[in-house]
Structure formats: C-alpha cells, structure tokens
Length: 141
Image (cartoon, rainbow, N blue to C red; front, side, top):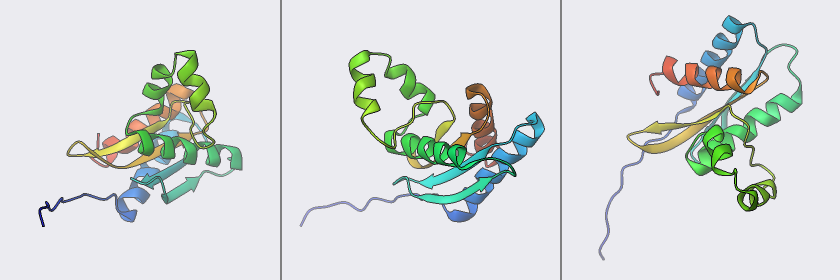
C-alpha cells in the first residue's frame, strides 16, 4: 500500500476563545457592539461571544461569515469582489450559509486554513478591522 502521512494543524478551542475575545476588545476600543464567532476548518463553531445588546441576527451573520471564510479559505470581502460577475453572484446567493459581507477571515497556519473568524455588528470596514485585530492579537495575522 502506497500512501503518505499528512500532518495537520487544528484551531483549538482555547485559541478560538482568544480570537473572539480579541475581536470584542477591538470593538470596545472603537465603541462598537458586535458578535464574534470562531470556527474550525469545517466551519463548525468553537467559540462565540455576543456583546450586551447585540441581537441574534448579528450572531447569525458572524457565524455565516466565519463559515464562508473557512469553506472557501479566503476572506468574505475577497469573495465578494470575486463574485462581482452576475453569474457567480447568483450561484452564491443560492447557498444558504454563504455570506459575502466583509468581516469573515480565514485563520491560516503554514498556508493551510485551520479555521476562521466572523465578526458582525459594525460597518463592513469596522467588522474587518475587528477580525484583523483578533488575528493579530493571537499572532495569526
């Protein structure tokens, strides 16, 4: 039998919790109220935080942004730009969990996607900034 052993990295729950906490810290710094969700490479939630007063719609959007970034191994903002073509956009719209608003970023380790973070509650640029700050705070940027 011929085969190879492949080592894989995984986003652990402790790091996922640090990611969402760091996103919240950045949101507080900006005076925002957000929801932040970190998922594993399969898009399954590992950690989620919702600031006081943030409704369920933002938690759902953060989860979908994280799922999208993990599934496609790129930022939701980059995917939105890629989907500028009407045909691609129509296909994306048919996927129930795919969300192309900025604020979803993949977590890459050695070039491999080990998970993602999704942030929702501010303007697109603010959501992206909170997600980027979370990656930087955890030395994953």
